[in-house]
Amino acid sequence: MTQTGAVFTVTDRHIARWRQMRSLLFVVLVTIAMFQGEPRPGLTGRGLALFAGVAAGGAAWAAMALRAGGERIQRYTVAACMLAGLWLTAVGPGGFGPCYLLAAVAMGVASLPLVVAAVLAGAGAVALAITLAVVGTPLEPIVLWTGAMLLVLLLALVRRQREERAAQDRLLAGEQAKAAALAERARLAREIHDVLAHSLSALSVQLETAAALLERDRAADAAAIVDRAGRLARDGLTETRRAVGALRGDPVPLAELVGELAAGYRADLGAPAAFAVEGAPRELTAETGLALFRGAQEALTNVRKHAPGSAVDVRLAYLPGTVRLTVRNDGPAGPPATGLSSGYGLTGLRERAELAGGSVEAGPCDGGWSVDVKMPA
Image (cartoon, rainbow, N blue to C red; front, top):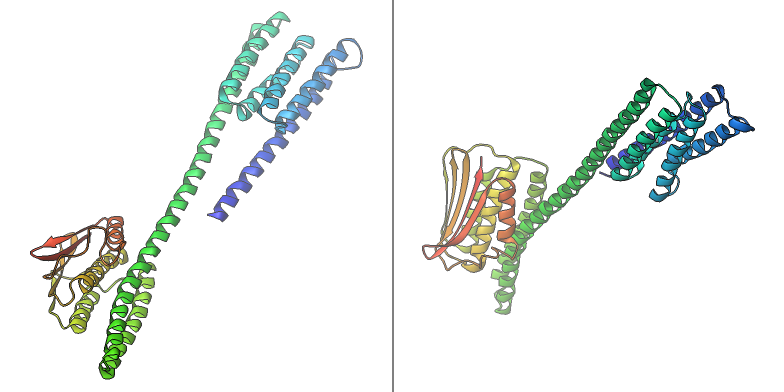
């Protein structure tokens, strides 16, 4: 994002610099043309009036090109350039005086509020037509110069709208990049929570049990529990590597992992834990597979915490267009609706499922608790 933003900034700076140089080149060319025409600017009489107009118009033109001062100064320079053009048109008819008005219109639209620029352009077009008519200019040149002013005004408006749209697109792209970064941070937070909530909660239970056994001088039983805790820690590392793989987009062996969760519950608590797969298993995206696996993980962690030892039934159903995971236990009711294994369990699970187009339902059923996760296949 930073690199992209830097590219846009450099490009805009180069475009602005090129436009400044182009405008300064034009004022030089127009000035040279004014000195080549008849009557020519000089230091006496009519020539002095033309010289004063060329000097004032050129200075105002250069100030507009360089964007000298703020918006208020820009209004004055645009108006000054128009007045200089009108003066040169009146003093030296048939010359290039109207060019100063064309430049004022183009740069006024680019640097001033649209209403102000439009008023100045309209007033300048009317004043130019009147000035040309007063000095006896034929109708065709009057129509040509005023039409040129209107054309320049329209082109400047189109360019301004295009630039504003491009700026809005860049701003939107920046906001989308920020939103994507926040979404990725939320995704990483969910992964960290899910891994730690499952592994550390089970590890904590084992260590507390070992400490209680040691207090009763049951060292052999405590050693077995500590060994089990070590295996849970290693499983936690494996789970962390699996989460990293899922973040990278690696496929998740869903049926195998959910079966291992049920077997682990059965081995740890000596309680019935049935696991069944319905339908023909098929490969799922990493996001979908991980959401279903986390659903089983959270649900079984919740049972360990709120109804340890209760019978558990885990079903994974591959349905047409949908994969459904259901975890039910026959123990007491589960936790409040604010969470499963923690205050963020159910919230994170729902967020994960909704981001992948799925849904999560959790609540009491038949004297126990049920977690139902549905994901599009």
